[in-house]
Image (tube, rainbow, N blue to C red):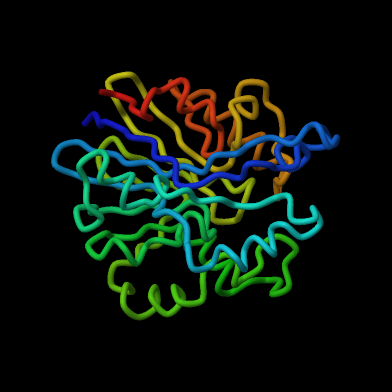
Length: 263
């Protein structure tokens, strides 16, 4: 099965420290870079699949205080009106209720924050990443602040209202023929790569690489939790991907006008 893909911008970090992107480099104040945040719509054979659901808008003020800490508020997440997930989907003729499958990577509020807008979607998260969040080895974690990962109102939602639709993926999982998910780690314990077959070749989308350079040049992610996971994941992605879609690279929309792949 071959699919068509729409890469959808759902927000942006206008300024991000370079050292967060590239390990042990790009430290200067002039090395800050813009990061887009993407969701991905996959369609084919009557199936409608999303990777990520957009941010939790009611959480942004609190999150930006957290994310801006240590940068004098410079590092902020911004959602423009045309970034709203409902508007992005409407622009390609899709309603949230049409989505049948929702893959989340990573368990962060810009990825999981809109899941309650998709009442008919089966929701997929990596089992080990879920366990590390809800049954953590270290409750006080320097990277995964529990309430910054899943907004409080959505904790009730996933355990009660949506529990029957929650699916906990193994480290290798096939969602549909031609849509495969494998665990990567690197960025978060819940980070995965989504590989989609299109007429242009295999597309790999993941948060484990922020920029093309992470894969093409094997540069390590600055905000990586495990360098060995990065080396392994990047090697695999280089072998299996014909088209890279870094989850945060603004150049994706330059390389694929209107975010379209496989049309």
